[in-house]
Image (cartoon, rainbow, N blue to C red; front, top):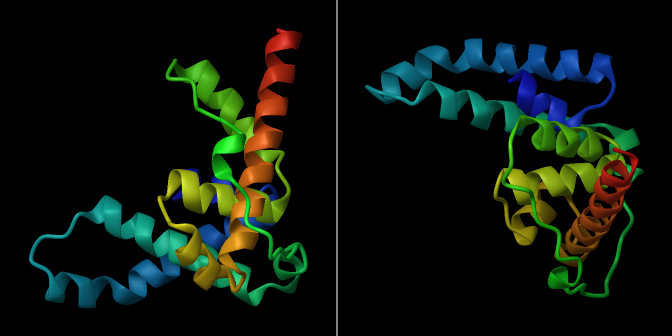
Length: 156
């Protein structure tokens, strides 16, 4: 839960709030889930609930909605060419830190699309934006990540 929440929040208070809300939802629905399914994959269930809590908070919270820029023009996603290095822990940690430097909405769209596997249409429905707006945020996130990661390599 902590790892999932860290992908979306930079503020410690927001992070703690999301974790607490996730635990609350888990506890409230534990009986129903164990009755409904004989064997559930607890890790997958916790992940699903945590992501739903985060999405609900983004929908409710005005400061996140205000950070959405709306776009009608489609964006060609392949133009950025961003790819994750397949190396070890240090590279992954650099990527995680770079993702946290992204603007709030771009980071959310990036996490939902690249990490959680949602389509732009699904993200649009979740966040109340158009699919093109989602694509633009993804495109910008990829560009910014490439710049940040290139800067890190030149400094090292």
